[in-house]
Image 1 (cartoon, rainbow, N blue to C red):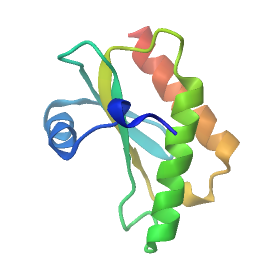
Image 2: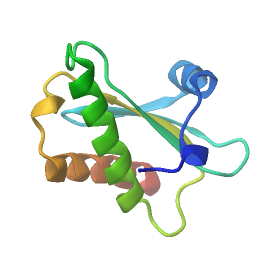
Image 3: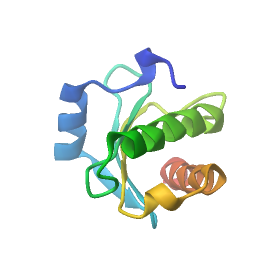
Length: 111
């Protein structure tokens, strides 16, 4: 699980949704902004279109935070970003989710 100091607050999420740059994959959308304080923070959001039950949405968020913790490089990007799950992402296996998150992170770091 990603430490709380590296997770987004509601106010930060609203700012990223309003001004962030979007990157898409088949089951995720990532919006990012440069971090104003030089650290990194990420969040995951799963709406009711993804899963009507809270158990499924929470499972996706926990898997996402766990995958992100393992995938962040030794010197993580100085970004704030939020991953939005798309409908159908509940059927992903944890390894497939890791691959999608990794591909989005690589796309950000390469630009």
